[in-house]
Structures are given as structure tokens and as C-alpha cells.
Length: 363
Image (cartoon, rainbow, N blue to C red; front, side):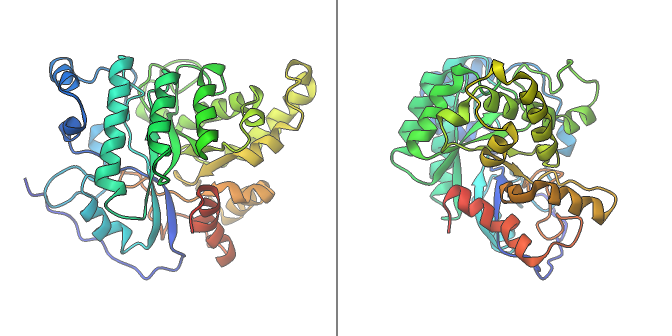
């Protein structure tokens, strides 16, 4: 099937080349990954499907934005050449960090989850990383099986430096700082990788702390709640003290909450620090040193003054903000129009490129 695409008007760019820290490469169909799976797992999927946990509310009619679907009719962001011709080249993308969704963490069968994660990683290598040197990879893991996750990290990171991080669901089965995940963080430290926590997912956990919401609008606003819980857990459990080289990247959770979370954590720490004597510094200091936040979805207050005040609250932690588009999703940010107010050129350079380049070791 050939799909007619609307014409996308091109503008002269008034911002730097950028690093897209949340680019969703996608397969057109699960069958695209069959060549990376053993016969056993292909037969299993054909018979039983990819059975996950309950909880997905993603509306299929809002899946991907206009202009991202290739003429072949395949799914958006499933053809690297089309992505190169319509996004990487014309938009001056210096690097794109691949963050495929559905990498196996939501599967109930942990054996299948491990096999599927490996297949997704091999697909990324063969069809994306090898296609264009601007791509960098996020290792997919069966996070609830730490031993297999570590094996997969070592299999890839020991031989290929194009992998820059390990991708977690925004809602793992336990808070991210819990000891069951520490072998994963240890492997990340061993190979110089960071950890990304990406919003959404259907992993059996509600997006809120009080249960399942009624509407998708709740689910769309809610990921920052889960992300703050993950960051709090990793600080309180001492993850960053044990693995200081491993940074936590928040994707698709907004970013205005960064500073207020630090304030609230400091207030609680002053009252309760005897409970966590391993935490020697203010939680806000640990947070500012170890948490990076992607811009998408962009914060859009009603006034330019409010936006600039929000940025001022970051202080030196302004270096922890990473630009991301969320391509090709329906609510992806246009790199030319993402910021709702004018940004000074020096700050543009930090937000669009320098912060991510320093984090991921890119030039």
C-alpha cells in the first residue's frame, strides 16, 4: 500500500545541529525481527503471541506524526533511508540516540523477554547502527532477569562502543534503586554506559501511585510521577554512591520537576537522614550530579518569564538538560519550534548539543 504524505514545509534553521536523545526507531511488524530469533521463539510467537502485562492505553489513532510515514506504507521510522532523507539530513541531526519501544521488558515470559531483547539489539545493530554513523544505541534488556541483562550488556558493549546506555521501562516491577537491579548498574559501570528510564510501557504497574486512571490524558501527563519515584529510589538506595560513573537519563517525562524534587528530597533528608546514613550529601546535590532530563514533552507555561524562571531554577544543573524530539510520535517536538520562547545562542548550544555530547562522549 502506498500512503500519500502531506508536504512538510522546510525552514531555514536558526538553531545548532543537535543530538536527538529520544529517537524511536521502529519495526513495521514483529515479523521483521524473526530472522534474529531462533525457530523455537518464532513458533512460540506465532502460536501464543507476545504476551505482556496489562496496562497499555496508547491510542492507536495517535501513533505517529504526519510526514514520518514512508511512501511504502510501512510504519513510521521503520526505514532508515527514509529517516535519513527526511529527518537526519534536512534537520541537521548530529547524532540520534535510538530508543525503540517494546524491547522485551513488558513480556511476562522472561525467557521470551531475553530472546526478544537480544533480537531487538541485533536488529538495531544490523539495520540502524551499521546504516549511518550518526546513530547510537540503547541496549534492550529483560530487566527483571538481572543475570541475563548483564550477559546481554556484556555481549554488546564489550565489542561495540556505539552502545551508549541501557534502556529501562518507566515502570519496572520494583523501584529502580532496589538491589535486584544493581548487577545491571554494575555492568553499566564496567562498560561506561548510562541508564535511561523511558516513560510509559505496559508492565503491570499503573502510571499513578493510586491505581489505574480512567483516561489516556491521565496516562499522558502521569509519567513524571513514576520518573520522580525512580530518581528518588536511586538516590535513597545509594546507587550513585556505589556506581558514580553511571548516570540516569529521564526520557519523555518532562523536566520542570527536576528542581522541586530536589527541594522536597532535601527537606525529608534533613528530618530523616539517620535512616539512610550512606547518603552523606544533600539529595539535591546527588540528583544534580547524576540525573539528566530530556526536553520532550516540552514545558509550555503561559508566559516567557515563567519559562525562563524555570530554567533559572536549574542553576548549574542546566547542563543536565538534553534535547529530544520523540520522533516519530504524534506529539514529537519540531527541533526548530520546540522551545516556546527565544533562547540565547550560548544556551541553545548547550541544550541542543553540548550537554548530550559530554554525557555520551560524542564530538
